[in-house]
Image (cartoon, rainbow, N blue to C red):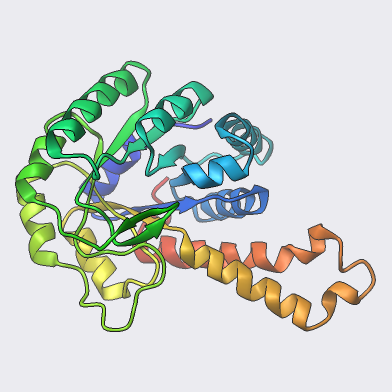
Length: 287
C-alpha cells in the first residue's frame, strides 16, 4: 500500500537520517528500487518527473504499475509515489492519477505567484491526504528542460513558503542536477543552516544527490535534510552494466538478446546503487 511521504519524513527529521527519493524510468527501475527497499527495511520515495511520466505513457500508467507491483512483490515498507519538479497542471494530473505525494516547482515564478499556487495546491493535497513539496531557489543543472544555475535560496522566502503548510521544502544551496562539473565549490552549508533556523521542524530536501561527496551528504542531514533525490547515479550504473554486457558479447550467446537477460545486469546495478545510498542516508532498518 502506497502512503504519503509526510510521516516518513517527520520520522527521518526526528531520527537524523534521510529518506531517498529514487526516480523511476521504467519497470526495471521500479522493481529494483522496491526490492532493495524491502530487503533493507527502508522507507522509500519513488520519484517521477514529467518527462519520465510521459515516456511511460502517462501518470495513470505509472500509478497503476507501481501500485500493482507493490502488491505483487509483497512490499511491506512505506512507499510514496511522488511527482518530481511538477508544473501546476502536472500536479493536478498526478493527484487525479493516484499519486500519494507531489512536488510543485514554482521556483521560476516570482515569489508572490509561487506563494499563491503553492498555497492552493497545499489545500487540495491535504484534503486528499497527499504530501506536498515546494521549491525555493532553482536547483542547478538541467532536468526535463528546466535549467538552473544553482542559485541559493533566500531563507526568508523559504520561511514564507514553509509557513503555507507544505510537508517538505527543496531549497537551492548550490546543488546541481546531473553530473557535477570540475571545480564545483560544494554545498553552501551556511545557507542551509540559515534556512533550517527559519523553517524549524520542516523536513528539507536535497535535490541533485548524485555526485555529492559522502561527508557533505552526512553534514547536510545534520542540518535538517530529510529527503535526498537520486536519479542520474542510477542511470549511470544501469548504462555501465548494460554496456559491459553487450561489449562482452553476452547478448550474442544463446538467448542473451532476451530483454529479461539483457536488462538484468543493469537492474542489479540499480539495486547496488540504491543500497549504497540508503546506507549512506541512514534509512536502513527504519521502516
